[in-house]
Image (cartoon, rainbow, N blue to C red; front, side, top):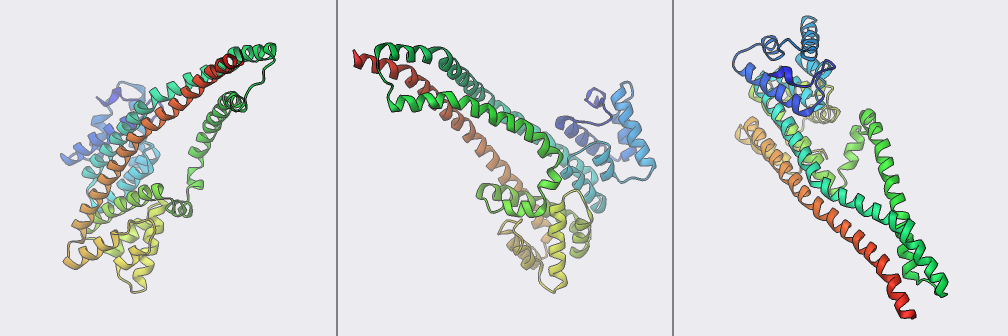
Length: 351
């Protein structure tokens, strides 16, 4: 049961554990359990982690905290999941939302594992090639140079360039790895300050990033607006609810811009067309949905299409990563081969 999952510090750290917990909680809510009953059932006593986690959640419920706040602060869920739960508190489909959020985290973890499997063998080859370069530079090349000096022969310019490449590349590579290791914690802790809305808008100017940013924001906004509209909330009230959440600042920016446009008397589809965080065809979907009176249904349908295209694009990129790394490794091997053979060829020509 859930007591076997990792929650030793009073909250779940692993994405896989979080996804399982969300799915199981959502299933229980759909079957008629209250959130308190679901927590009491899932966090079976007997281990320190789940017991501590259960106590923290129970205390938060007794204080009257919202579910989105509990999932954010006590369970340390990703901000996107907390935002989904926040909207579910207004449109009422909490069970379905938790199941979808759980599936999202499980799929995200699956994609992460797939990515690691794709790159682990090529990265091992790169490291092996770099180690071979270092050994060649320290052991074999000095002997070649001593032999050149004995024979009174000079190395060619191409050989000098190749030797400098082999000598300097491992240093640059490990310097890059060191910078990456140092910068990753910095980016993690200061991501909210570094990736503000204006920075996200700027990143939409780059083709590949633009697709993922626009597609992701269009999918999420269309989905949540659809749920709110289906439960009888007006467009203006829905946008106000979205604006009040603090988990995703980009959605606050979007809703403020849309509310401002509506107050000025413009149509919703005209307002969406002006936002660079949306896909270009989103305004057409909104206009078409308003025209035939099925805006909520068509927003949900379009949201599913966007999510499917995101998955498809991500899988396509994974297919290109491994061949690219293998090509890089191939260049390494060729450089090593020529660095060994060229001195031999030059000495044979000098005989």
